[in-house]
Picture 1: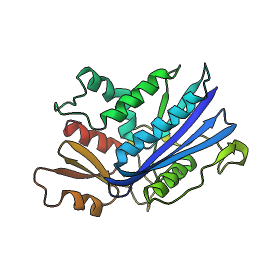
Picture 2: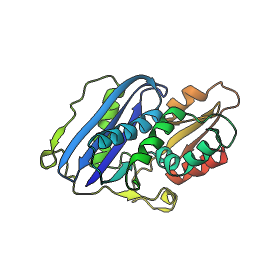
Picture 3: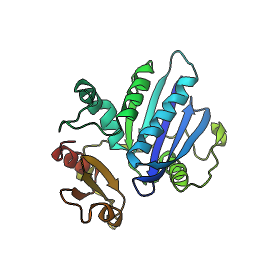
Picture 4: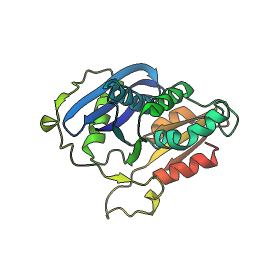
Length: 239
């Protein structure tokens, strides 16, 4: 049996009210949407919670043999669970700078769930806001919950779902976005990162970033335009 899991998280304010959205597809036959709202959280916690909730749901099905494919637009989640988490655990949940790992509680929970999956999970990066139906629907659910508004969660036959679940999304390598050319006239996506007291936060717009870093001594911030730029920046910050 194969499960496909799409996930996304959102936060209004970061930190602020947040929500997550997940889609679980069982054997391309049945679809279950998941989501929830949180009063005070961060975008990264919601990205993690989306995956955690999806894996918990899958494990509740009590299938003895199955595989899982996860699609997410969070480099933080993929890098964390496939690379960083092992070093963090070995070092007593300290990062490369010797400070406590942010969101340790969720990382421990996610690692525990991953270890309960009978086969190795396949992780794939899907660029956010790139018209991939699964990612867009998860974003819609997450944003609705972050704004404390109700949203209908589908639970039923895949043939009657919002999109054709048999068509896989457009996945990308997380290291080569900067080398890819976009069509002429297409606006290049970008976002902002800040490092405040050892905590990395992502912002969709400069105004959001500016509101958090303005007037605060010792903070770092920068605009990035690809996942590879983000990865390189985080490495330069020791993350």
